[in-house]
Every structure is written in C-alpha cells, then in structure tokens.
Image (cartoon, rainbow, N blue to C red; front, side, top):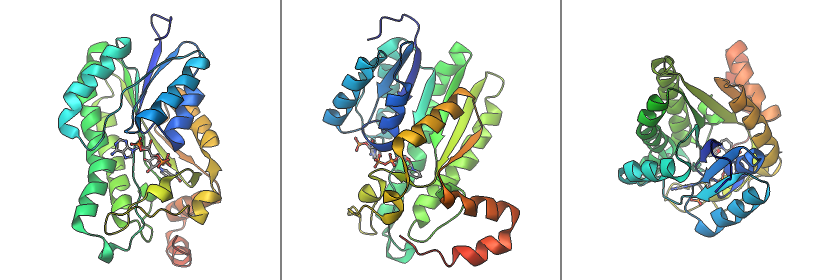
Amino acid sequence: MSANLNPEVYWITGASSGIGKALALELAKPGNAIILSGRNVQALEEVKQIVLLKGAGCESLPFNVADIEKFPEIVKQAIGVFGHIDVLVNNAGVSQRSPAMQTSSEVEKELMHINYFSPVALSKELIPHLRERGIGHIVVVSSIAGKFGFSLRSTYAAAKHALHGYFEALRLELREIPVYVTIVCPGRVKTNVSFNALQGDGRPHAVMDDGQRKGISAGTCAKRMAKAIKNKNNEVLIGGAELIPVYLRRYCPPLFYYLIKKVKPT
Ligand SMILES: NC(=O)c1ccc[n+]([C@@H]2O[C@H](COP(=O)([O-])OP(=O)(O)OC[C@H]3O[C@@H](n4cnc5c(N)ncnc54)[C@H](OP(=O)(O)O)[C@@H]3O)[C@@H](O)[C@H]2O)c1
C-alpha cells in the first residue's frame, strides 16, 4: 500500500491486459493508488509489481465481471483497500467477430452482460460511496462501435451504444453530487481484443486482426485517456484514421452510409 495517506484512488477493471494495463502504468505515480481487477491473477500481479516500482500504491482485486451478484461484496472490498475510491474505470470488455445471423443468443447475452450490464451494475453499487463522499468519477470504455454499427459486431456495437444512453442519463442525474462521467471511445488499439473476441458459437476468434495490428499502441491510448479523465471530459474519441467515419456520420450522413459499405469487415 502507498505511504500516502490520502491518495487519488483509481479502480480499473480489465487491468490485466491491453488498455486497462496501459492505463494503470500511465497513472502509476506517487500520490496515486490503483486497484487492479481482472480474472488473470498472475497477470494482475505482474502489473502490480510495475505500478509499485513507479511509486504508486497498488493492490489487485481479481474478480469476474460476469458475477454481478457478487458486486456488493467486491465493492466493499475495493473501498476497503485504500479507504475510498475516487475514480472507477469500467474498462473490462469482450468484442465480437461473427455475423448477426450466426451468433447464438447465449453469446449475445454474454456480450451484453459483460459489456453493458456489468459496468452498469458495478457503477450503481459504487455510487452510494461516491454520494457519501460528495464527489466521484466514473469512466466507461465504449468504442467507435458505440458510435456506429459495423459488420461482425452487431451485439458488441449494441452493448457499446447502450453504454452511451445509460451513462449520459446517469451523468445528468448525478451532476449535483457531483459524480463526473467520462465515456472513452477508442478506435483501433493494438491489444488482444480481436484475439479474445467471441465468435458466434462462443469460441474465441483467436486472431490478431489487421485492424488491431495497425492500431495505435495501448500506451498512446492510455495517455489520451488519462488526460480526458484529468480534464473530466464528457466523451473522448481516441485513435487514428478509423475515427473519420464518426465525424462523417455526424456531419455528412449520406457519405458515411455510402462509404461504410465499402470498408472490408475484419
Ligand atoms: N483494442 C481496441 O481496439 C478497442 C477498441 C475499442 C474499444 N475497446 C475496449 O477497450 C476495453 C479493453 O479492451 P482491450 O483492447 O484492452 O482488450 P484485451 O487486451 O482483450 O483486455 C480485455 C480486458 O478485459 C478483462 N476482461 C474480459 N472479460 C472479463 C471478465 N469476464 N471478467 C473480468 N475481466 C474481464 C480482461 O481481463 P482477464 O482476462 O484477466 O479477465 C482484460 O484485462 C474493452 O472494453 C474493449 O471493448 C478496445
């Protein structure tokens, strides 16, 4: 635990890999304390050792974000680690690589559960603590798939779109406390996300897609995320040229609908 008696405490889900791990390393500095969550205990321990070396407080709190019924106890444990939580980063997520018509309803439910119901439930469980403290910050990792639907990602896109509706409403409802809400929309980031993405029958895609391979690094994504969190931005888009369709859809919908058909689905 950090020697600092009143650190800024960040709780990051999905901190064992990719964007969550990179964010933990980015935030790892004296004065900060980080609670790392994920299922992979060994990977969390490795991240923890690096965070501690960089001078931040750190503890790991492994759990499966699918186990929503355990959240009351998990949130209690998380608050107990450093005495309070300042920022919850709902980052854990699983993508999809399957045509809608070949995706089983079990897989659809799993994608909605992990990407939508779980961050909603975890946030709701923490909010009484933030209300009691009179301040807090909830970060949600959406995606450009939360801004427009794309082939092979029907349910993933649905879950990420749903996050926007829910957390925009929550932001308004909690503005008096205040609890800030930042929605992060990465484009393509070079992580294991495509490798871990689910196929229609629930098996992992197990391929590093071209899009991911050519994406920005998780470190670059984490730097921009940390800045958006610090600035309490409502929403931030992070990526490269793959973000263009988001702006096209906003400012020139006919061109967006014409061009998006030509993008090869990977
Ligand atoms: N990479 C991209 O291009 C991209 C683009 C847009 C949005 N995103 C979003 O960014 C977030 C992070 O993804 P990533 O790219 O860093 O992928 P990643 O490397 O596959 O990391 C996913 C993280 O989520 C955790 N996770 C997954 N299922 C979990 C479960 N059931 N319980 C607990 N933790 C679970 C994993 O931890 P364990 O394996 O230890 O459980 C891992 O730490 C996701 O929400 C994803 O949708 C990524």
